[in-house]
Length: 169
Image (cartoon, rainbow, N blue to C red; front, side):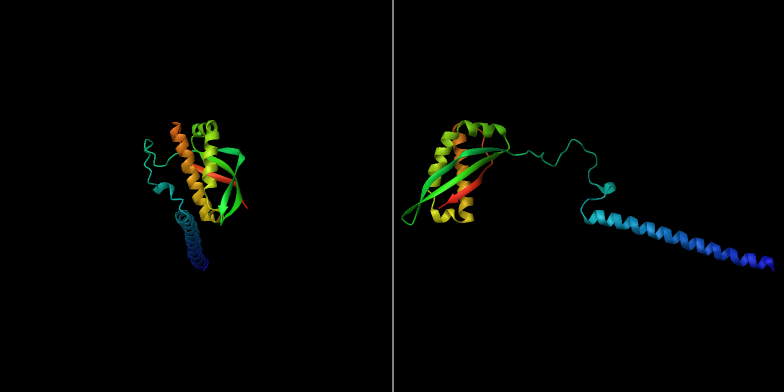
C-alpha cells in the first residue's frame, strides 16, 4: 500500500513543475516581446535588424555646423511714411552665419551694410512693419541687401538676418 501512495504523488509534482516552467517561459517571452515592440514603435530600431552593414566609407548625414552670430550694437533708426505722417522705426539686428569668415567680412564692411539697411528700412511702409508677414519680408529683403554688399566685396554670404528688438511708433 505504501508503494501505491508514492506512485500517485510523483506524477502530481512533475505536472506542477511543468506548469511553473511554462509560466516562467511565457512571462520571459512577454517581457522580451514588449521591449522589442516598444523599441520598434518608438523608432529606435532593433540593433540586430539595422540596415547599416558596417560600411564606414559612406555617410548619409551631413555634419552639424553650429551657427555664429554678429550683434550689431547700434540700432538702425529712421523715419517711415504712414498716411502722410512721419513715424519712427528702431531695429536692433544680429547676423547669423555658419562660416565665421562671413561674419568677419560683415564686421569689416559694417558701415556700408548699415547705410544700405537704413535706406531699405526708410523705404518700408509703416502698416507693413506692424504685421508679422511684413517683418518677415523686411528680414528677407535685409538679408538680400547684406548678401549683395558682401558679394560686391568678394566675401561669403550670411545665412540670416535676425531682429533682436523691433520698435515702430
